[in-house]
Image (cartoon, rainbow, N blue to C red; front, side, top):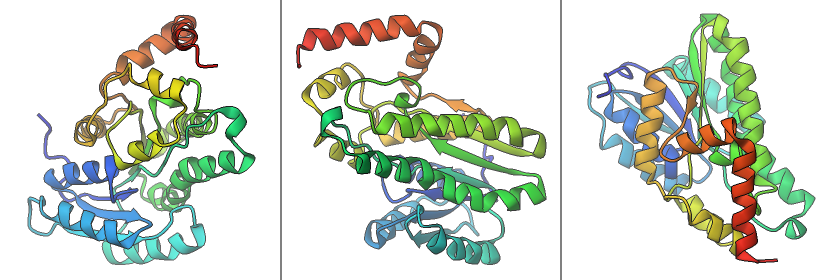
Length: 273
């Protein structure tokens, strides 16, 4: 049972209009948090605002939205400054922005690699860098990143996606070590496959062998991932591993050779090439 630790806290959620971001925002609102959701498209963002507003539990809670591409620092910075001027420095930033474009290596272009890094890595770094000076001045704050199971192991089809998620893990590891003595917490989520609109879109380009390998895992709901995410944030955990991610992480860390052997064997069985 979670304690009501998010009451009177202000939390920004990027990528908050759908999927894990929206489910996490709703879970935090139920626990008393005030939310600012950021996403690119105004219409889904307005719908998300209504959904989160419907579950607020306390007088004084608010749910605001900012329609902006978080990779666009010039556009985002004044909008965040305006929010801070009105609502104060947020207690937490949760970065859920990201997408996957799985494809065989020979079908990928350099532009595909750059776009995955721009959205998945820089899309989470840009808002973090904007808020860090505020947190360092007040010696408190909490930033959370969303990586993936493919942020610590990978398989065929994810040559452009996995490096961007590995990069987030490296960023989070570094920030955790540097910011802990200065009062700023860092967390990172490693979700397995999750039943979101982004996952549906990802399936459109998956090579057949990638799709077959993915079928071995259980598909989580955004709500289940969000519950694990919020519980981990509530406890101040660094690595947050929902569902099967926990044993996958354990196996890949303790026995990377066995993990690679299993994946190689599974791919060979598919005889896709």
